[in-house]
Length: 110
Image (tube, rainbow, N blue to C red; front, side, top):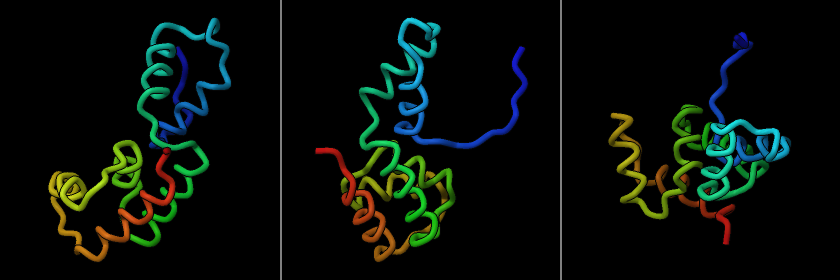
């Protein structure tokens, strides 16, 4: 059994980057399923995800977990953002929601 050295929340693009370093034939079944999932659903690359994470935490005062949730989903509208913030049980001002959307839109894959 492998010991857990540390825990860190990471986004789907970061998971994809980690799994990209493993040859497909060397992956176990769960790694293959995970790689397939992140390949389909990661909406930006790992470098952009890191930058977005930093910006969301610093400029929008989000928790790292909240920022990663947004990076994984990449909401497109204030209404979609409100669905997340409702789940976080905290009020975020419309100005901050606009800033969040601006940060997310700056790196969206085309």
